[in-house]
Image 1 (cartoon, one colour):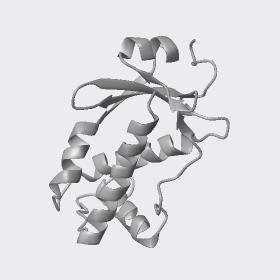
Image 2: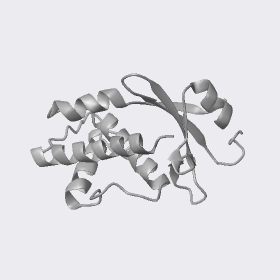
Image 3: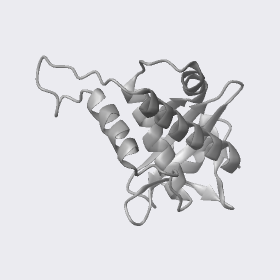
Image 4: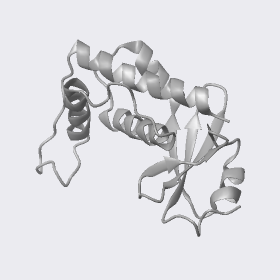
Length: 163
């Protein structure tokens, strides 16, 4: 089954785990929201890029998410981290949960919003960062704990809901 005629855009998500790789199909739903493909109330998972491309179409862009590295970050308790990687995971976990009609618990609190905004601005996107400037956010211990909680929830949700 090829989805390329059904959705405006389709991408393949490559998740790297400690002992394997899994591929998910990511696309827009009928409301324009980003979701992953669900079958029988589970995330549809492919073991190879070729099988994911056969399902979704071979002209799909492939995005990589290294769960193994994210788990190391969560358990290392470092004060410094790559805002882009953390924000990418936060966003993709939101899309995965939205696919099931769910949200990350307590994700829309003042603390979580502050963390998200710091991560966003820490990406130093050219469109919003003045030339020659660079924002490096400083996170409090509570903010770092909150970020790790959100990411841990996303990982656990994925593990529980993969086909």
